[in-house]
Image (cartoon, rainbow, N blue to C red):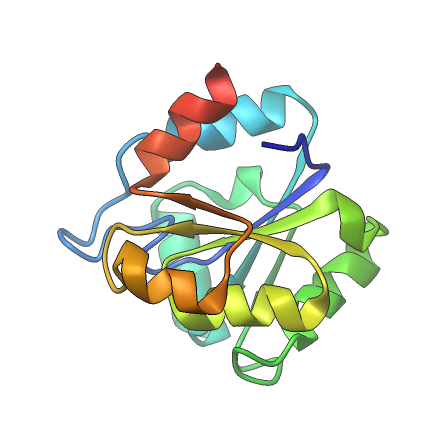
Length: 151
């Protein structure tokens, strides 16, 4: 997999686990690893700003993210506005950015914005469903993505 400058994460089901409402396995390790490599990290979530900020603070994850965008500030996924806003804020070129998500809308949003995408099949969509939206890369989980980035 390519070494990107900007990693944009979906929130619910990607950073947080839809199974137990905690963090996805190895997500903290992944965030730490990317930050140690001086990568920019962002969130593009379909949720609203106020509840997102409360959870972000409660989970003590705010320090990892350079910028966040929510559906209450932008057009809903799969419209590319969230990603375009993040790219404009960070100044990172589309070729150096990737969206990581657990739904077809995350992958379609990335495609609509002209950036690569990573599908993680750890909740809402199966690998077969993701194939229809043509992600750049597909992993069974954040844990598997972390393992690949480490190797």
